[in-house]
Image 1 (cartoon, chains in turn blue, purple):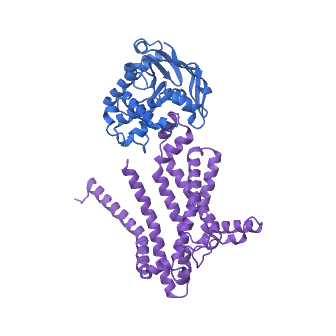
Image 2 (spheres, chains in turn brown, green):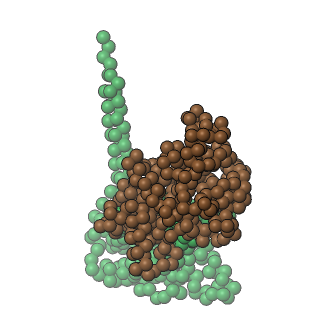
Image 3 (tube, one colour):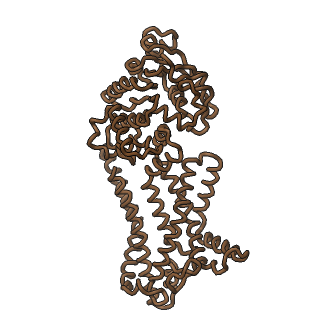
Length: 250
Length: 287
């Protein structure tokens, strides 16, 4: 399968501190790729380099290339990149002053879409894709903050999907959720790969094993090993990977 | 056998003692406020009649003073709110650099400047401009100069309260807006600012209350006037100034009227505080 996103020798810094070094990695189209590793290994930094969110932090910088369908995203306007590559964060963060409808429509509306029909359609489709429609269809005008944690996270997924991105980045999307809400999101991720390229960062190895075709293992800012998820978990090539997945450190 | 409290009993006593101490402190803090409201009400109510509001200060009323204060507050708000809030946005969203730190420092210093110094600043600014022939010399004692002085007081206040309000909005709200491909300025104006709007509005209203009660800078700018409002280039009366003049006045009827004017001013400020509470309440209910 073709690589939708390819990083070439990507390094990233926070001020003088180097967080990731020379990461070269392919993310396949219409598949789920997972990035695993212990806390502080640079997996969140890497995923934030993929949609130019890393540079929103003061004094942060990136070197190397990130290719989206062969095109270097660092040569495109950041807002364009972020519309094509959506992101869901660790903590569900619906916009507090907006209703459920407004939350989902926010990306389109604040980018200038005014047509009510098109907004309605996008909200309906996105909420259905995020498996939230049935739970909120009668309360679209309620505040997004009134939903439960798991629902809020699916609302954030719907919000990201509404701008019709090609890629969806997920930075530990289940870290703050209970097992039932986690299972719902995992089912959802499985469905989403029909239409989207999904990259998920997780420190939960079982989650990577459940949802991802390909898994990359990072440690101390370096990419240690990458391969088909099953192979990586069952026959790791590197001793570091093996120690991590068998729980000897991390 | 010696009598000893066990630990639980001791804790309960300590808890009770601290509660009583905290309550007494609250009472202590509220006494001046209560006493002020009480005195102003008792003494002020006697002078309040319908004509008190319709007559000018020349005839023992405060009609022109209320009018002048409202005009001063409105004009000051029109200038100071946009400038102050935009400065607050700059400080909170773009100010993490040496320039921002310098602006923040000067804004802080400006909030500490005694208001009478601000009055002298506005006075001498217009005086210099008048001497240079840029503006009419009559403008030195006018509504315009008063508004310049009051704006100079209010802008840094609003800037700092807006900055604090915007800083309370979590980074994650900004990040999720940016991650949707929304341009930064629009994310700030349409997502971050609304998220902090009740705190920004509270700051704005408190700023208005603050300048509404200023006397010192008005003494040398608006000067005071016994007439109804005459225009931007003319002296203008204001409630604090009226209180000042009436209270120092030679006859007891004037002193009496000063209490009435004080009561009206206190009620106006109280009204602003109540409105700001209601705004917050309404916004939190709609969530």
